[in-house]
Image (cartoon, rainbow, N blue to C red; front, side, top):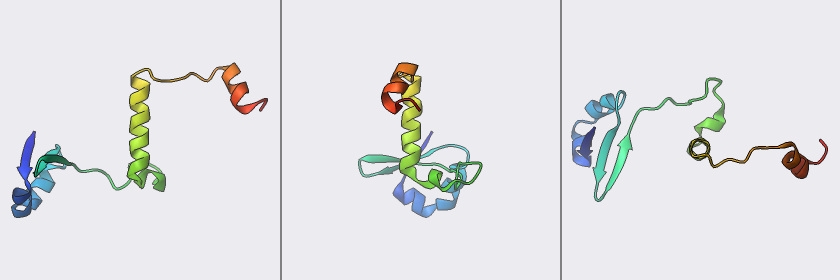
Length: 87
């Protein structure tokens, strides 16, 4: 882990952006920490613009964590019928 100040980022930006290609760089600004990391422009293999929206990616990550934590409801035939009728 590497943590830098905003001054260090300003003075040696290229160095830290290059480093962020291989590991997160933590940036201290006042009393908060930010993470500088490289990501692809669009994580979708098909280039779907839905994945360019950070809120959408956050919702996906939150949903994946809920699955890992076991906070899910299985769609049983009874629940399906209640929600969608006889479709």
